[in-house]
Length: 251
Image 1 (cartoon, one colour):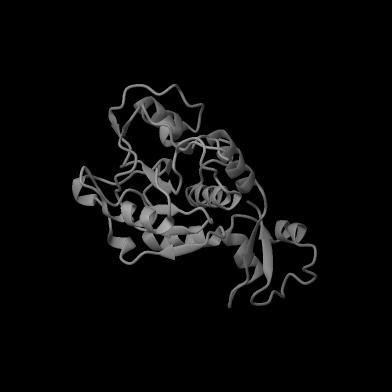
Image 2 (tube, rainbow, N blue to C red):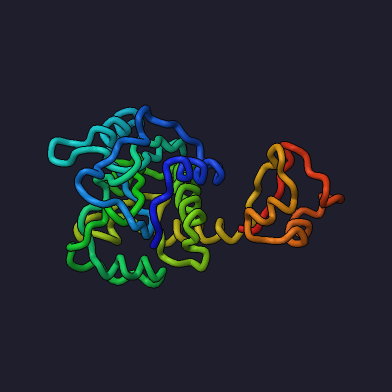
């Protein structure tokens, strides 16, 4: 359980994870906050759009439909792996779901079978819509799946979720009865969760910026200079790092 990230922190977390981003005009202030509270947030939810074409998909998720006003998510993940940020705050993506599933997500434990939809998911989940027809035949390209993993890992990392292999990342079908998303060749939610966990456990690379020291980098990432030297044996002098230099830090 956590307060939602600020829009700036959200954007920074995605960029730090290597996500390719397009910022749709006005995304920071586009939300449904007038309809209810957003937060505390407990996880990330993955959907598919039942659409074809990135431009049309983004437009739909921004504007919504007559029966479901936009924004319909926080970001659209295109087939090429680009993430289009379209809104921030409460979004019409999750709908009502099973409170037992929410409890499992909070505990990062096994997900139960989906039961009665009575809990507001729009309040508790970041939501990403992925460009896909959802017919079980439309493929999920590796670049798109990699972007899903990076987006989910970025938010899990920012909130301290999921490193133990928990269920902070779920599909819409795991939240609400009657849903099938995401579906198709190239993606499963257990596979996405496994990839997110592996990414969170692997060393991460950061770039030295002006004013950085190895000690400051260690402190910022909750580790020690000694651990950084172990992960970066090419650093001969711990008192000398240069702007632009990559440094591996613990995941």
